[in-house]
Image (cartoon, rainbow, N blue to C red; front, top):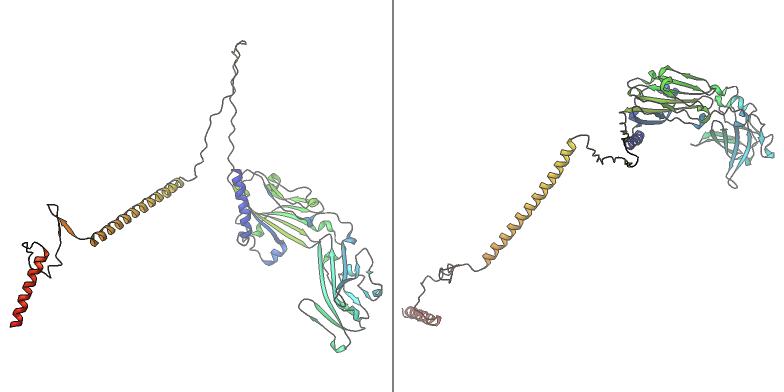
Length: 438
């Protein structure tokens, strides 16, 4: 029974992937502004468990691990790279910079000629300034912003072309990147701006990480969902209502391992509904949501427990001690009948229908065979000479076809055919002579 229940749960989880648009229509009825505020749904599952069991709704995220980052100056890095196509294809690092380190220019020839503002990590302006543009500066420049703690990597590409005619200076978009055509010997600023709070100082990171669970009973709108628990990266925790404190729990070290799974014990039919796990990291710009539709089924049947019978015999003499063998339990054959009695009648109908079909086929074959034999016999009789057997045992031939040609009765006075032919010849001669003389 347990294997069957596990198989049903696995099938429901697989079907949940194909039915997300319809299954979560109840939770997706809010406006776009509220959905952006709640976060992006990254996971959705259907879970069915029997009543009285324990449910674990998984919610994991490695990006929400609280590491108490004390090396913020090394977590944010910006660097500019140049992709050259002539005379050969190669990538060159121009410069890089982090909040705790000075600007580092890799080519000595570019020192004092290329730079980015010193206040880059304060106002988010990481634009590259190139003075005295040379023909060798032509290529594709890439501005790369990395935040290792938040696992954020962004890149912006700008193509720089150099011309000797002032009339050809322009800036346009080629469909993939911005193209700057600048005059030889002039100065140019390649823009790269990101003013998100992520790149600015003064944020208290421990107050930027929040995780909470919501419960939405059937028929309740998403904005009316009940809040179960709030978790903060600073260690603060808030439980709401007796439902959570009595039968639900979340690991105490949730922000240490990134495990925010909700555990529900002693499931009951009133526990079914939508459970949503919300993860917010305002410092890193992370807003994720995971939804679980929990369905509570009937409880599992209890396995029968039989205690072995113990027979005590205290009236046994010491000289004649009997050894009592354990009773063998009777061999019981468990027969699992279908849940509905109609299954047996249905199977019996299939068997009878098959049997009747076989009988019908056999009868048709026999009838066709007999008809074929009868038809062959009639053909043989029609081809043979037709006659009747007389009482004396002689065969009388049917001369009905010859009567139209010879109507004279047979003269039994002729002893043989020669005499008959001779007599017939005389009659013909007489007739012929009579005609001639006339």
